[in-house]
Image (spheres, rainbow, N blue to C red):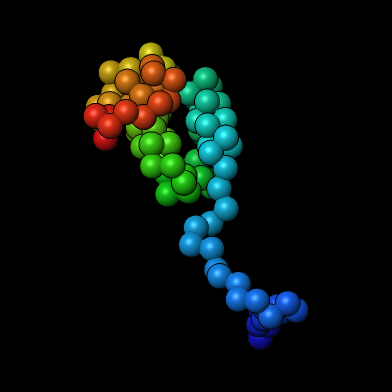
Length: 102
């Protein structure tokens, strides 16, 4: 069986990262694509879930959009504007999170 060993030539202590690499911009682009064209969700749903988002607000937006798409409803800005949990308000504010949206 193959094993992975870490080679540290400098001898300095290297800490393991606490979180996986992430890109807020990539998350925003994916959500924008899904909210613009709900067919994008069908293409990515098999490999991407809410647990893959680093930003909890993005994960919640993805969950709400996925639930609406599963019910064959529109998941764009108009569709989410009345969504529960303040998600529509976050979207209408330009995805800025306010303390009362949590």
